[in-house]
Amino acid sequence: MGTDVTTQTPEKTGRRIPKTRTIGVRVTEPEYLSLEAEAWKAQKTVADWARDQILGPLGIRRTGSLDEHLFTELVGIQLLLMNTLGPLLRGERLTAEQLDAVLRQVQAAKARKAHELLTKRLGTEERRV
Image (cartoon, rainbow, N blue to C red; front, side, top):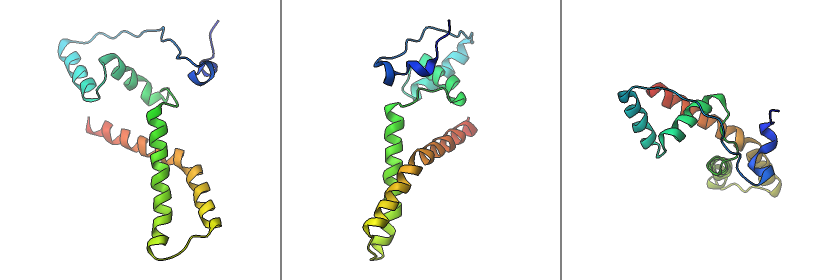
């Protein structure tokens, strides 16, 4: 009866999984206005913002979003620059083998590092609230 969500990813079906379930929460008018202000700051609707807030801590967010991929690639570029510019600025030359090793390290570490940075950022934002 239940469907395995992991088998219905957009990458496998070529389309989005419809959102068919709802969660209702009653709030006071001042609470709603506060929620609405936070949603607007994030340039989202109240529903989309609330969904992100509910699913985010559980790690159930949509995986593979374009933003996440772009951020991961930016972190990869940053790691590549950090690992190659130092020696180059000191006048050292990187051999083809050294460059290949750096590229392999970046490929292996960029997703983990991007996740760490996002987790740290979310933790910092939660402490501010």
